[in-house]
Amino acid sequence: MRTKGLTILELMVVLAIFAGVLAIATRFLASQSQDTRIVQERNEVQDRARLVLQMVSQDLLLAGSSRFIRGNEVRFDATSWVSCAPGTPCLTGTDQLERDTFVTRYHTSLYPNGQECRSVGYSFNGTTLLRADVPCSQAPTGAIAASSYREFAPNITQLNIRYVCGDAAATEVGLPSGCIAVANPTERFVRAALVTVTATSPQGTYTYTIAQRVPIRNLKTDEVL
Image 1 (cartoon, rainbow, N blue to C red):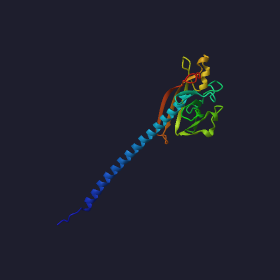
Image 2: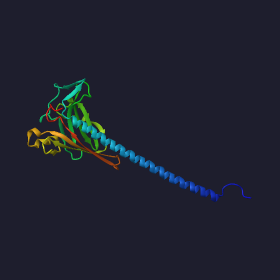
Image 3: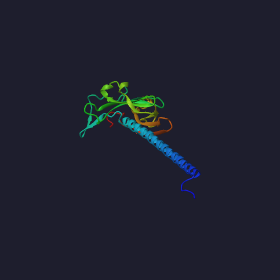
Image 4: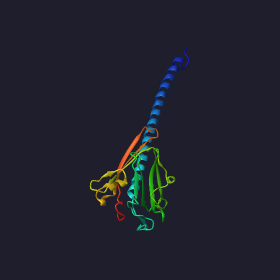
């Protein structure tokens, strides 16, 4: 009479089936985990590129703004504001092909009394984008001290800015000062910027590029708001 239980052969078959199921489940979970990491990595790269584009666009949009709001009044800082002129530009930059830099100054209501005038700059340390935001009094000549720059976004492989001049042909130049080449003196100002930002993942496996046209309304005269 046979006793109840599994033979060695039956036990081996069960173990083999269990091992096969476990291997399939392990591969499935590993694949799911990898897919999740890829999606997360792409989202982080895209968010970083969008953040950089948003901040750069905001600073360029405000370039040369000489007014700010306090309470319900639009005010003009006659004490510390220096008009945007060839000798005292409100927007300067360098054309580095893929990693352009710039410095701008403007007024904003986001800071307390006496600090509304800001000098804001962008620079690079390798592929790390740096940003500086100091009171205009700390950058009287337009140059911002290197010690004022802070890390803003890593793995930014491109910040390309093309400036659109105020002439009818909408001449594009690599530097804000390039609009001086426009024939009509009244059209030698920057009216827009074409900004392109590229961010990559730390391993370089994913790249995301985003671009935007930014209107710049305050560089023609101080009366333009």
